[in-house]
Length: 287
Image (cartoon, rainbow, N blue to C red; front, side):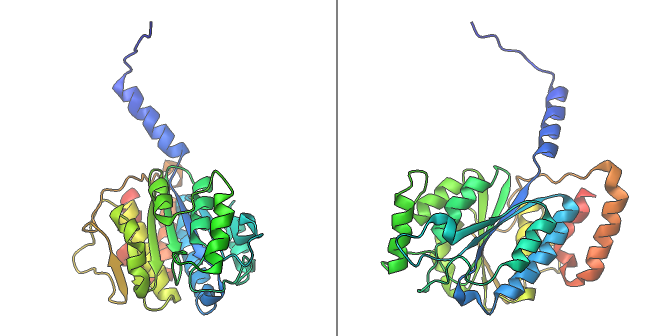
């Protein structure tokens, strides 16, 4: 016979709070590093450096999936994708040392994003924000690189070779958003169907990518809409299925013993990046 026990609700709430503190949210960036990104990669690294300062302040884990493309049917998945994990400082050191095309430069316009998403699924927890940053899209036409990717993925029973099916699988444990060029917004429509945000930037420069990243942070970590007078810049084309006020499923917690340190760091961050201040309400709320 199975006996059910009724627990004290207050005890349950404390237990939930403890679990949330033990398993804080994390951010995973899937970054295209193929040859077509040569004019943007340094700027994107700078944007990630700025984002990492905020994540370090909030003790949020960062994972970066660097992906290239296949150039041979004998190429292994781990030759196309590199994972950066560890402390924020370790990750940023690895990113700074990473060279364009280290995981395959890509011979066509589309890249091995499906492989990167499979790898991301293996690395992330159920409390993660996943953001794709690319100037292009996944393989969806019969090119040689697409065939090589399909061979690599179908030969591994744990991998999903189809983009839409991979998004369906990912969305069960994370949110998925995209930063890309405006002409590729339609290619990511399946992400929008799962309440994902798709940001189109004419140029993947430091200012635009940084603002897009913080807009996504605000939308994902906050339960409030943009304050009066604050609007998304015209050079960022943000598309989604909702009204940009989705309830956040993430919980940011601050150690009471570190409140003063947090406040000082928060003020210094604003001084260093005043243009981001309108997007930082979610940081003020947890303080």
